[in-house]
Every structure is written in C-alpha cells, then in structure tokens.
Length: 418
Ligand code: NDP
Image 1 (tube, protein in one colour):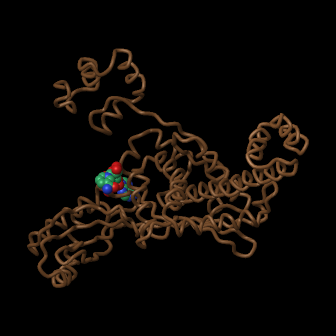
Image 2 (image 1 turned 120 degrees about the vertical axis):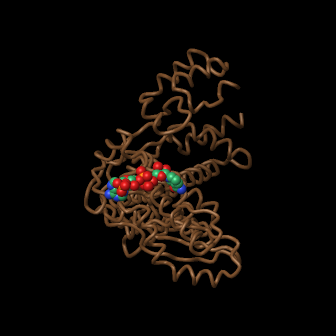
Image 3 (image 1 turned 90 degrees about the vertical axis):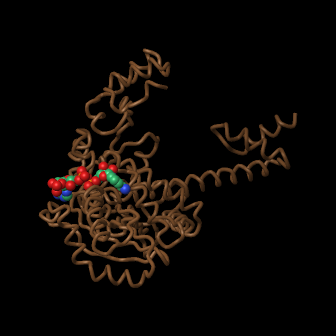
C-alpha cells in the first residue's frame, strides 16, 4: 500500500486517486466520495487524511420550554424515535409549565501528574505553599482568558498513591470548553514544577471528569396528566418512580437508562458542534461518581406531582473547537437562540430529562399494556375451554384478529380441535 505513504501530505484529489490506483475503490465509488464531500475545504481544515464528509440526519426537538422560554432544539442522530421521544417528553413537561434548569458552576479541571515521589505528604505541602506562583504561571501562559474575566481559580493537590500526586488546577474558561487553553496553561505549570521543585512530571492534561461544571434540569408533572388508556396517572407515575429506583440499584438497567438519556444529549451536542466524546466521558463517569454506576436521573412523587431531576456535567462551549468553523453549527445556534454556554447547558440537560421521561413512560405503559393484553387473552382462551398447549395457539391466532372476543376465541379453538 505504497500510495498511502505520507497520505496526509497529499491533496484531496490525490488522496482519492490513491484509492483508485491501490484498487480500493472503483471510479464510480470515488465519485460517490466526491459527491458526499459538500465542503471539502472545510473538511480538510478539520481533520487529517480527509476523503469525504459523512452526513447524519438533523431534525428539530420541539416543545422545549425551559425556564419559561420555548426553544427549538436541533438534534443530529441516525436513530429513529429519538427526536420523537424527546419532543413527546418535552410536550408532557410543557403542559406542566416546562423545565427548570440551572447551570450551577462553570469551571474545568486540569491535571499535572507527578511520579516517583518519595514523600507524598511532604511534596503535597510544598506544592500547596507554591500555589500562588503556579497560578501566576498559568495566567501568564494564557493571559487573554483572564482579560475575559476567567482564568485559573484554585489549585488542589491530591495523593493518588504512595509515589503519585495529581496537581489539579480549576480554571474558569468562560465561553469555551477550554481543552486547548487548559492544556497550554498546564504545560507551563508542569515546566515550572519541574524547574523550581525538581519533580518528575508524567503528564499534563485537562480532566474530562468535570465535577465543577454541573447543570441540573428538573420538572414537576401533575400525576393525573400522565394517565393513558386504562392506566391512571398515579399508576404510571409510580412505575416511573420504580424504574428510576431500579436504575439506581442495578448497573445493567442503569446503563440502558443512561443510554436513553444520552440518545438526546448526544444528538443535541453534535448539533451544537461541541466535542461529544468529551460530554459522553464527563456524563458517563459522573454516573459512577460514588463508585457505583447509577442512573443519572431520578423520579419521585411529591404530593400530586411526579418530580424528575437530572444533574450532570455538561462542559460545552459556545466558542472554540469547530464551533466557529462549521456554518451549520452557527445556524443551529441561531435556531436555539441561546445567549451563552450556560443556556446551552440548560437546553442539553433538559433534552436528556425529556428523553428519559419519554423512554420510561413508553417502557412502563406499553410493557404493561402488552402484559395486560396477554393476560386478557389468556383468560379469554381459558374461558372458552382451551387448555394446555391450546391456550398459546388460541392467543397466537387471536392476536392477528381485529376483534379479540369470546366468539373469536371459541371459533379458533373449534378450528384447532377439528
Ligand atoms: P479553542 O482552542 O478553539 O479555544 C477557544 C478560544 O476561543 C479561546 O482560546 C479564546 O481565545 C477564544 N474565545 C473567544 N471568545 C471567548 C470567550 N468568551 N470565552 C472563552 N474563550 C473565548 O477551544 P477550546 O480550548 O475550548 O478546546 C476545545 C477543543 O479541544 C475541542 O475541539 C476539543 O475536541 C479539543 N480537545 C479536547 C480534549 C479533551 O476533551 N480531552 C483534548 C484536546 C483537545 P483568546 O482568548 O485567545 O481570544
């Protein structure tokens, strides 16, 4: 595969022709790549070894009322039902007055890991005493963020093991997610630690476990408004609470519970142009913050209200990365009409909670309905005299009929026996 040597240095047309010369693709297939590349100049600036643009469908999440303001939420996903689910969950909450959401704090954390430490307690104290100089070093490494009112806030030293320390810097990155600016500051801090305290630095990088960037979305839904067909609102609310409890107890269920939440969050984050791997990493690790992987949302009944809450880290930016580069990302921001990154956090957390409500509602109702239908048909079959294997045969054929009543069950049983 000689043609792939220094592939990154080739132009886009050259890269495509390599695919043909190396017999990887036919001319027609190359044309398909060309056709899919709607903005090759943009793609080339974004990634390495660019060959085409891979598109995903984008749709609008509707009915999102958050802190009294109604939003259109662009969502990018390949999975059917995600946008319908989010919009349905949001509609239930809209009828109850909408979501309340609050971004509690907006700061990021970076780490300088120090290895080969002979006395961790002593070095910890030494670094803590040196904190003002280290914070100043971080400021000097990226002064523009301080001019914007942000910058390094605090230094925390944690002992990881008998020979390992983590020097954590908490940084206000203002409207940016801040990965690059944090890494710049941390590398300067690492150099200062090496030169002034003669320590062995293993690495310096931001942490994606963003416990200083939390947002809480919540909603209160009158229990009676949840009623569906033959199920009362109270029954459904109780089932949702029970489902929430199971997700707190069982990691098998919690993972699926959270996957449902992330269906909406990922779709909204991708549409916002933010680094969705960073958001996934932050939120999934937060689900295991107490050492046990749990459901991210909780549902409780308080009086006559079903109260849902989702508290998660959402370290998104309104600037930085590819946000300013991709025109569609800008257009999506225009659709959402958010003022800043905190408002975007509120939207994303609310999407997660809406998605979760829709999923739990469907799970506990349709599952119950199916169970009810099966039970009903079982007793119907038994009531016309079916027994043993006949019961399941009658049910199987009854399910295919529009009219599932005693006369139909009797007729089916007669046909089976004759
Ligand atoms: P950028 O490197 O693009 O930095 C954002 C820049 O925006 C700032 O440096 C700042 O420049 C400018 N800016 C303009 N207005 C503001 C404002 N109001 N508030 C803050 N900054 C402002 O992006 P990030 O530093 O946010 O890094 C995100 C990127 O890093 C993503 O692409 C991500 O994929 C990637 N990344 C992620 C990692 C991870 O998650 N582990 C690791 C490494 C990279 P100035 O102040 O100089 O004008």
